[in-house]
Image 1 (cartoon, rainbow over the protein chains, first blue to last red):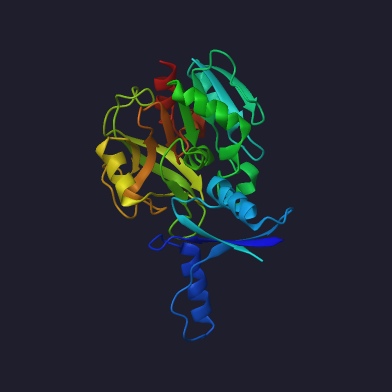
Image 2 (image 1 turned 60 degrees about the vertical axis):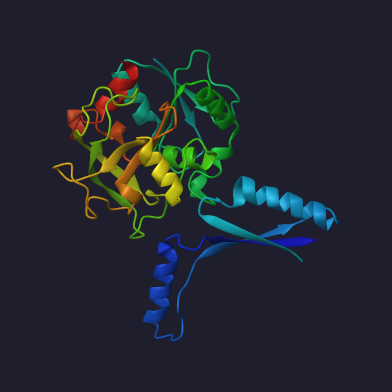
Amino acid sequence: MKARIVVTLKTGVLDPQGKAIEAALSSFGLEGIGGVRQGKVFDIELAGTDRAAAEATLRQACEKLLANTVVEDYAIEIV
Amino acid sequence: MRAAIVVFPGSNREADVARALRLAGADVVTVWHTETTLPPGTDLAVLPGGFSYGDYLRCGAIAGRAAAMDAVRDHAARGGLVLGICNGFQILCESGLLPGVLMRNVDRRFICHRQLLRVERADTRFTSAYAKDQVIDVCVAHGEGNYFADPETIARVEGEGRVAFRYCDATGALSVDANRNGSLNSIAGIYSENFNVLGLMPHPENFVEDLVGGTDGRGLFASLAA
């Protein structure tokens, strides 16, 4: 099994990097982009086959290290 | 005063803070991050500046979960003093010893310049050698020093008088220009609930000798060693 974890900044938290990327895209003349928020993706190989156990482990990984829940949200997808 | 400086892979200001502490009269030892205890008799644990673990994941995130941080957490819980400077402040926030988080500077640039700070209170173990509202001249050098916390946390920190230093101008006034990294309420440093843990982004250890341009940083180390 594999998992993908996406960590994003919470709504309302200032994202200077996202703003810079947004400005760069608009400088290329690309139209129709209303806003950019930058996040992180973690692709994780899972050793077992128990989805529920894997999800619990990944949740711990997010809470303990992968996300700073003061400013970040995370989403776990097992594929 | 016995100080233990915890060194992580990528720490680079441990020698400067050791020197500042020794000038103030402290005994200083360094502790590698894999140690699970601090030396017996440690009064002060110090987390120095630098780029622990190359700032991978988030600044201070990996160091904040190192073995030695459990020892620092126990030391703090017993009322022991803890000082985190720059990356050390980021580590304290990531480890949960201080609230909030240090985000990317608002203008996205690494800033490195002299910086005036207003001393918010002089009745703590870290600032007794200063006067309340004194303006001190130190410096900053960081890319992620933009202090952020949710409104409830900010209200609590402010309400409990836990802001240690704020970025200010020469008159001690706060302004957007003086607050280059964009920190909420111009916060440059905060205390823990019991005022035994201090984290700050600026570098007082850089300014303890006239030879390098100033001595306003001495007060912090003199307060600790007093």
